[in-house]
Length: 406
Image 1 (tube, rainbow, N blue to C red):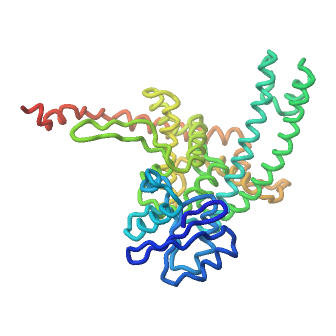
Image 2 (image 1 turned 90 degrees about the vertical axis):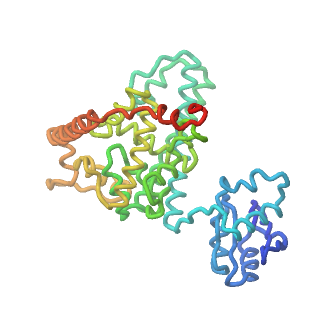
Image 3 (image 1 turned 45 degrees about the horizontal axis):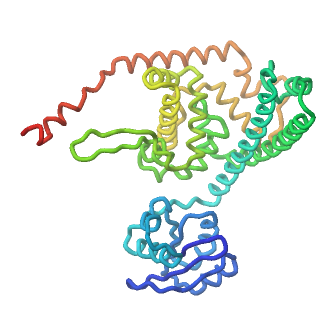
């Protein structure tokens, strides 16, 4: 089936012969009617689009299997000279019959719901960023100096904003944006509550929270993208899924050229990893030492992406081995866990009895955990200081080059 917004083109592959069935409307009733014409041994192939998951759920009870193809890897469709709905559907059927169809993983209902929640939160955050940028652009256009307060949109920042000399239309635009910011803040709190309730009993999310720099939004976003960690046989598979692996070009006896990261994969999860990398780079620990070592060679931007890749590898090991992060700070992890409970709507605990986040509120205990993290950072620095730079492979390639031997 070649899916569109309102219809799907159906082609049947039977013993090497393609037979066109026609179009099926993209409604539940029409799809169920089409499903009743299928046999129990039939397999349905569709391409990953916006409505492919819904189509797969409707047709799954009527067919032996519903396969969702990866559109980025179906080169026979992307580069075809004759491209029609019938040809595309026939190509999907022929590739699947030959066993060459690149298939994507279909998440379960809980993971799919978490993906929707994370995507909605991402859209709200992007909308809030656009609103704030518009306000900053208005101030910049009228030569208004930088706000002396830490946040332009808190109570003190807004009071300072009302005192700035601006035209009436610009001031009205700022008021509209601030009102929209207040409304989106309520939407963001509601979506955070739904995400917290969805991952409250998820041991994998709580395990990722032990990593320095990973908060609830990052942990939930990563688990929504990963789903079942068992489908990644190695940490390199997970890194490639996030698009954090470098491009490699090599032919013959020539040297392999490593370029920028591929950026082929879950873009939102990749952005969350980079965000967590910047946070981890500011806290003491082995991750900070790794960031500093790469920054000295390649700069801070490359170091942040390299640290994001390192975090992906760490996530794979923690989820696969079902272990917490070795250099976790207990007080900080307790605070993250308590914040998760409060966002989910759990009641606040008041009284003389110490709660799980008591240690985080005591500066001496926080400093003690910080010193332990700094010791781990120095241990990592001593460990990598003994590494020897790998010798160049240029001489070996020259010896293997037949042209040089002549």
